[in-house]
Length: 208
Image 1: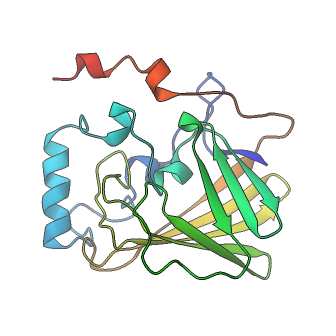
Image 2: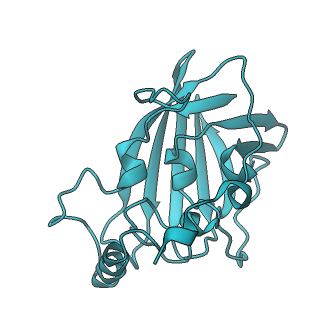
Image 3: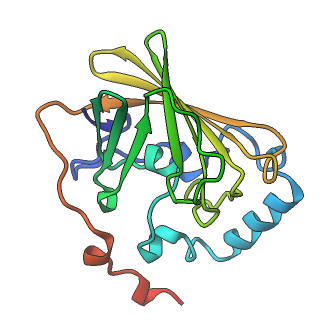
């Protein structure tokens, strides 16, 4: 199933990014953002750099939840015991294990973490841990630690829309769990195209 995020089409065949792609904490005012002192200090330092240090600017992978909020399309492929999510952005992928296994107790930290899923009625619930702290939560630069846990809840609203609720729980960086909810849109009769950052990147030479 290929999908885009809901939003206004910008004329290039791609939807506008949702607010949570830019700012996962968009539902909070700047003064009331539920950040710990450690999280706030990292966020301020990144903001001072005007986003020039964002990993994706330097062709590093998108982390979570940016692979979900990124307006580029992706495809969900279901098979017995595992669900694959293929992302057009930099041709990355995830594996969501649905065979009943538990999280590995000592995961090797990765950009997209280690995901296990289960069905609660008609909602797919995915718990992901084992992250590297190199990725950012959004374009604004909200940080996370390696202790972050993300819970995604995929619920199909109708034929063309799936509601996705994302909850980020990271006590080292946030004083409470942060939740964002938005819709994904089905793109029938289409497929992913090849896209590699290292091949298309033309911006880093202009960064100072």
